[in-house]
Amino acid sequence: MNNKIIIINGPNLNLLGEREQSQYGSITFEKLKENCIQKSKDLNLSIEFAQSNVEGELVDLIQDARNKFDGIIINAAAFTHTSVAIRDALDIFKKPIIELHISNIYKREEFRQKSLISDIATGGIFGLGADGYILAIIAMQKLVKK
Ligand code: DQA
Image (cartoon, rainbow, N blue to C red; front, side, top):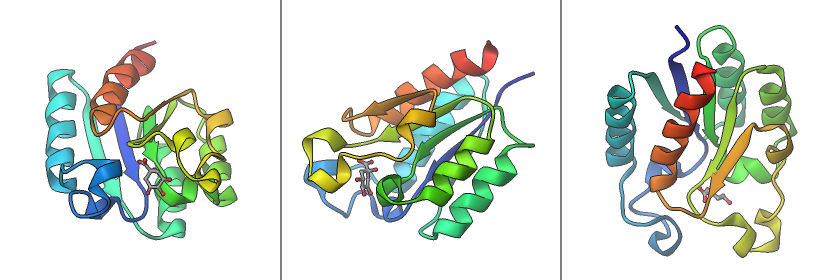
């Protein structure tokens, strides 16, 4: 049964609720995690919710996901714009990938308007706030069932 997904969060997302509320809203990381777990349960998905501030740890999570998960939802945060290593790891994962951003990166500073992940992701969600995580889970359920 294809129902195992992982949501991978990059640097500083652990401080949601505290950091730049004008961009990311007031939801805390813990509450976001709770909401994602609940939504996944409703959709009969098994979910792991991970976060790291360390680029290499994110690469390890993505590599390990090859044999454990049917799909990856990733908010690589600042590494979206800089990390060839994360891009390369994702490119090795031959199953669905959803790129996710809470804010609309295309409306922000120029350095955020370039994603190294978009062209290898199955699809993406940005600018819809924390709800984007719930929408990504719904979309991923359809992708993994295909
Ligand atoms: C982000 C956007 C990135 O540019 C930023 O570095 C983040 C969060 C988002 O979810 O909107 O940390 O990925």
